Image 1 (tube, rainbow, N blue to C red):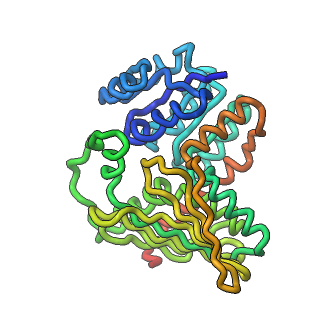
Image 2 (image 1 turned 90 degrees about the horizontal axis):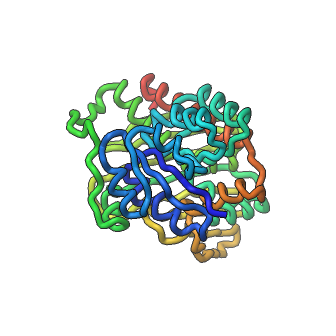
Image 3 (image 1 turned 180 degrees about the horizontal axis):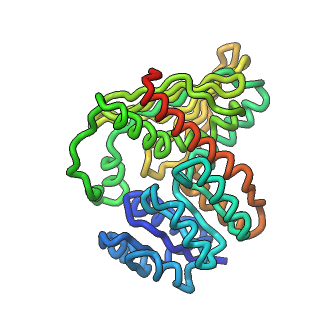
Length: 346
């Protein structure tokens, strides 16, 4: 069976990621409708993929060919658009990260999906990457994780947007606003909150698997020009996120490292917006033997849609508790990191 997908949103993630991916899901999904907030970009995407387009959400939600609602709108609208999909009777929802702006709202939203019997997948693509599943199997054997480090050094998204679509990244509205004042604690806190929910979110679900327990922010600070440094304690494990978004320079580095008494495991994820297969897993054991596993053809972006297809076919169970726990974990870390920055806990 092929399910029709309506995508709310028409930004770079839709143009370079989700719309092309739907065409590569072995017939599981077909893009049938794209909507925007009035920018007109939905028409350009729809034309490329022979879909319909509209502004706002009403026409899309009423489209009889839309079986799955994909919420890819700006983050502050995610919760409202998920609820609009539920109210319109849709029972399969893909929501880009983050699911909601606070831990309480995330928990309520998952509860509403569960009460409606709606399937829900959140687009934290690293969690779905086949390389991560391989790494977790190693860690299950090698003992408890003592430390985790996540390193993100990201070059401009526009580089990869052009590579995938041949088009420049659209300039967002409001881009003429003044630059961030990193001397202002409120602006620093807001920046860290945005980066945690927009970037670290991909790996916080991984961290929750590795070092289960309530997260405690040990320190948080901004990193110029745009980035953050964050230390967490969860259970018996220590976690450090280091992120910098650079205006120019080398290709992106996105690495998750986990250390146990028996091994160090590194997972190198590909840059955003490209489709070059999954991450690369490297394992170094206590004797110094290094094993590098080949990259899987399937990347996390495609795998998250395959996970939704498995739910729709009844081949997998909908785990609302896990989705809620991941979303609450992300929101809690973001809120606590922002509070630490405002309080000067650097």
